[in-house]
Image (cartoon, rainbow over all chains, first blue to last red; front, side, top):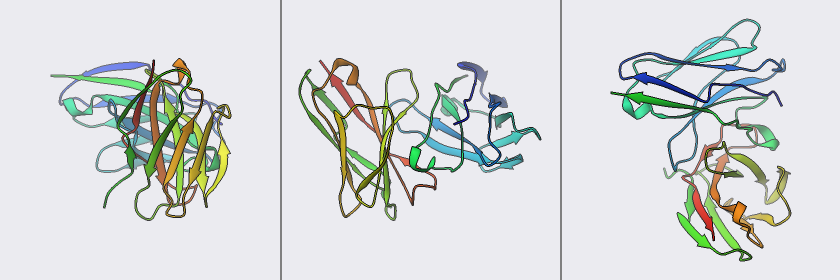
Length: 113
Length: 112
């Protein structure tokens, strides 16, 4: 399983765009990159998944360079409710397959007024 | 449509006791995975059940066992509780082992 590295914590302000970068130097050819969000005392929630270039949905964008050794989760115009832990995962399937999902410590994003 | 549900919400046990946690998957899902999340850490995979069988197990001792019922609901059992078993236990369900996992709110277990 590819190891991921992401900042332990980040701070920003309401209305700003936030970019969280994840490094995954050993990503395999068939691996996908998936981001989850977790609020305190709740289970993680799927945000976005991508393989290469750019993916956008109603809550975030995911930028993946050509070498795929890193990825950047972009949250546009954040609000206080975006304060959460964000996990970057790399693996063959969005559900992790039979081995389950491998989470690191994630990035604790704090949004201030 | 109800999502993944877990019971109980909170639980307090003492060392050496046994505990059973329960999970009902999202409608239409047949695969259930269990995770342990210690304070300040990411969730750690315990095991996964599909077709009432344990498909894969993470790095957890045999004190952790589980079961999946014909209606796809699942139980996690932990025997001989240790203080270090205190954590948030998360259940996730998916439609087959390959698709996106949906997590429940978790059960907070405190071992005294």
